[in-house]
Length: 104
Image 1 (cartoon, rainbow, N blue to C red):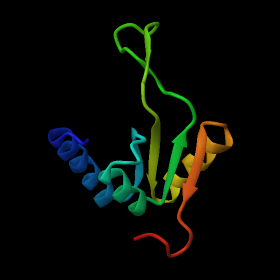
Image 2: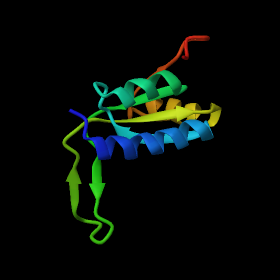
Image 3: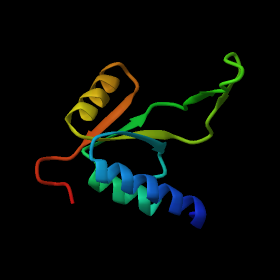
Image 4: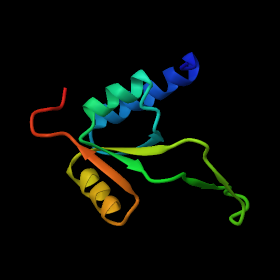
């Protein structure tokens, strides 16, 4: 179930990203959430990251923790899609793009 406060904050960032329409948004791959489904229809591409992402504590570069959830990157704009294509080519994950005219 989506937490109201966290969902509202996420929607604020998503709205800003969509309004800007240029860049990459790194998020959890919660495809069961309404915000994720809506964004997947608006973005030009989504890269589903293979495996789990390690986080590095900024204070101690040797200490890492692994996320317990999948991650993805949404792209909007030609340069962002090109960057995610390169990431896929280098084995980071699987890229999904919309076919011509399919975005809603």
